[in-house]
Image 1 (cartoon, rainbow, N blue to C red):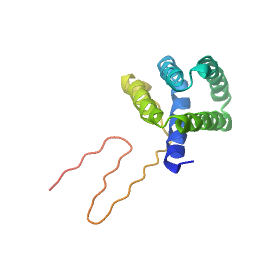
Image 2: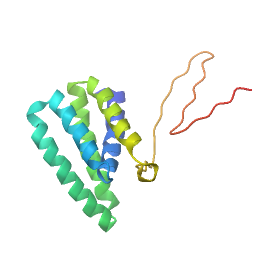
Image 3: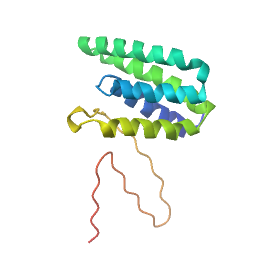
Image 4: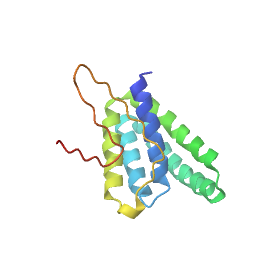
Length: 141
């Protein structure tokens, strides 16, 4: 399995589970179900049901302070997304844009908290790389 595909699936799975716990749940669910409908239409109903089950389990885990269960749910979605991306790598860009749109439309106070971001870059020769997990301001003096 391609390492980049796996890395994106891990990030997307974690972000998806984080969104499931917010008011953006319905929009996130719609984006995921639409993606499955395009790539694996026979699994659309099952994925919709799995989103509902995940939300229920996540709400219960959060109420009990069960962070391990939250990580398990994220890992389960990471695995599902890895298989989906392997079947159709173009789904990566589609999901990335869909989740970014969901997060962008949320009011600032409801934004999903992301505990960590992994950014990788390769620079050669005299190239420069500028990376940020959020806002970045570069002033050339």
